Figure (tube, one colour):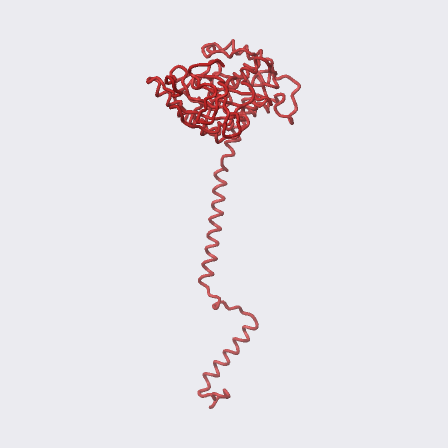
Length: 399
C-alpha cells in the first residue's frame, strides 16, 4: 500500500516490540497494520489503530494521534466500543470468529491486537472465484457457527458484508471487524455507527429501532445474494417498491428451497424474517436443502414457492409451541407433587413424636415367658405381705 502521512512508517515498533511490516488498509475508524512480535519469535499479528479517517491526524513530527475538537466525543465513543469488542472477542474461541488477544494505549489512542489470518476477504475472493449453491450453503453454515457465539452474549455484529468476512487458504470463513457491534438486551436501542448500503437491515437505518439476531440474518442473506450474483444488493431506497428485488430472488441460480430461505432472510419487515439462527438451521433441515445435512435424503420433486413459505412458517410456529410447552410442567401436576410432599412430612413428624413420648421401658410385650415372670412376682409380693419377720441369712419366714 502506498505511503500515507496518516500511517505509522514501515519498521516503526508499536509499544517497543510490534514492528510494522505492512499497512493492510484504512477504514473510517482505523488503520490496520501487519506486524512482527519481536518478543515472540517474530510471530505475525494484526494491530488495529483507532484513527478517524476524516477527523484524526498526526502531530507534526510525531506518532501521536490528535482529533478535531468537534469530533472528540465520537472518538471516545468508538474507543469505548473497541474496548468492549476486545473484551467480548478475547473470551471467545471459535474458528469462525477472529481471535482477539488484547489491547493497549499509546500515542493518545488505542491499539487492539488480533490473529493474522492468512487468506483474503470475501469481497476480493469472489472477484476470482464463483459461488454455486453448495459453496453458498457452506458459507452460511460457517457464519451461523460463528454468530451463535456472539448472539449468545446478546450482541449483534451489525455490519456483516463480504469485506468483513475473511477466507483462509483452508476454506474457513472468519467474521472480523466487530467495532460496530451493539447489545440488543433492550427491545429498542439508539442506533449509532456506520451502516453499509445494501447490507444493513432496514431497522438499522432508523434512529431508534428494535434490533436483534434477525438484523444480522438480513445481512447474511444479502451477502449470499452478492456471492451468488456478483451484483451489489439494492440500496434501502430501492426497496420501497420491492418487485424488482423479488424478481432477482426468483432468478438466483439455486434450488427453489434455498431461494425461499434467502427470500425470508432478506424480508424488509423484521417480523417476517427468521427470528434467530436456530430457525435458519431448522429451515435448511426441514426443506432438505442440498448439502446441509448428510443424513437427510434430498427431495427429488420441486416444491412450489408458496408451499415452501408455508412449510417454513409452520415449522417455526411448531418449534415455538414446543419451546413454550417445555418451559414448566402443568399447574395441576405441581399441586399433586406438593400435596404428596406435605403428606410425607406429616407422617415422618408423627413417627418422630411417638418415638419421643413412649419410653422403651414402658413397652410390655405379652409373651408366655413374661406371663410366668408376672406370676412369680405376684407370689413373692404376697409372701412379703404375710411374713412380718424373715431370717436374713436363710430368707425363711419367722412367724
